[in-house]
Length: 604
Image (cartoon, rainbow, N blue to C red):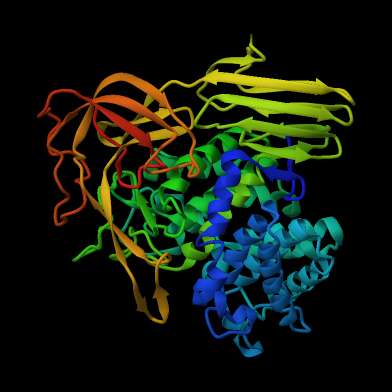
């Protein structure tokens, strides 16, 4: 097992399409929630009267690294304003969450775990010298309350106990006090034991439970990675065992697990909550850092390049609560919702479809991905973990990566060595014909180079990707090319809604939309052959109108039909697989670009 450390926002500079994606986020909803959304703008965390639990910490968890990655002084100042206010309300005991002393025993301490993590993120970005002591007092108070029996873990805090270990790990590096290990044991003993819950994941029920809640499960995958050192336990890769159960019984073509809002099985018309996309990505980032196992970085790519952009509008002012693999419309359900425990509007694009947790939380995904592009280890090795356009300035070297990956298959590294070090590139899976500076490279997994002090090197890595079918349940297929999954895009028109509900205003550009289909969607694949069409990467990297790469597929119409009881949901399986048209060529879009789409279809 090889442990890696990620570089910080002070060392990493996003470039190319990655920087543009972050700029879009800064210009849109996640970059402006403190101006337009009451739950952040008027939160109890800063002395207001709106929500005082998870939403401000969720928002800061993404807003802070976004501000520092873009070196945006206005955003940095706004982040500091929130941190200053939160710190100012910390009680002499160390308690920091916005509730009275009398309310503490019944206040779900998930918020303590979350704000502790946010304070670590803020310190890593800002270097604010106040934070270690503030965090020490928060976590010490949490230990005192738990160890004395004044509070116990319940509800969300019980199922997310491991989130506290982000702060425990940080504090162990600064203070090294034995009570931190005692806290670690209390948290695990009172927290949910997910290894005993896997039987519940094999048969989805239309019943809300913490045990099958998709965001809990996405977070859960990292529990061993973040906790085992402080519990004195061996690392066993339990995440692989648990994720295998989830994949087998609830997996999707893009590496997600269905959950709308609890596990939904293998149906291509069941949804997956956006919070789980962001949290599953974060789990994979930490799993790779702890284990060094490339599979976690590969799975991270799948989510980042497919599931994440698919469920957010091009301008990032609107998002879904639930996305579907086969999603032919995003129109309010007039009767019973399709989803297991979510309601009529969960699949609309908008400000706050279903619950506001995703409104606050989805902003962490892109910035934390950017912070996971480069890592280093104790053997003086720098690793290009996820090959995205960026540069780093470190004590060992300055390195720039110019690329349009995953839309193109060229990686151009420019390296200026300051000291002797090893350079390591994780090569994406499912690639062929790897060449380095024009010469064939035989290792399909990684590229390793030794660079001596003063050496300047340019490494151009090229490779091929080939479209291939992925087997899906019920004898359906999906198409994957490298780390991109492709879908049949459905043309649509948007219907905008501006209104106010429960004191929350929807007003352009932060309003709600229905996506109403305009084109046919009942097709089947009729050939194993595909043509790759590479195009320009525009100012909107995952554009729904001008995707940077497409596949030409040969397909035939079939009688697919609608799900019983619904006018705007395709049937789980086609009514017939008999072709009803001649073969036609259709351009498939990347899953992340196709907001309405068919992704799981038969091959006839």
